[in-house]
Length: 163
Image (tube, rainbow, N blue to C red; front, top):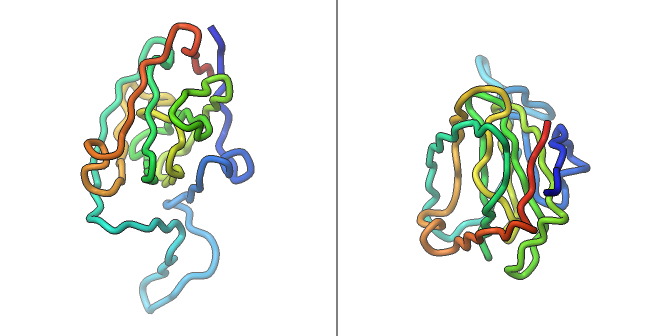
């Protein structure tokens, strides 16, 4: 079975898959008032529908063996780990055929909002340290029912994420 080493996320290594921003350590120009600093539009996403904000709870598996992946043909997805760093695995868009030989895994610090581009292969984030991860999933409403293709990987396509 192929192994994929999870590496710390950086702007350069994640650029092919999307963007991210560390929400609890904002940087750059801010709009300032007497008691606040507002950091506008650090990540943006187009949407013609209502947006859903959905919590997800993910238990830490004994081994991080990836047996399924999903993609959204026309929809971006955002994920923010709330109480632990998360492991996020992704692979490039590939017209519906998994390309797990190109899969990568990233260690994403908690409170970092990640936006994955449409058609990027992924699945649920995994906890990096804790027994369970709580994360926020942000998607246009009902994407999971209207634009979500989940694929069971063959034994040859499966891979294990290692730290």
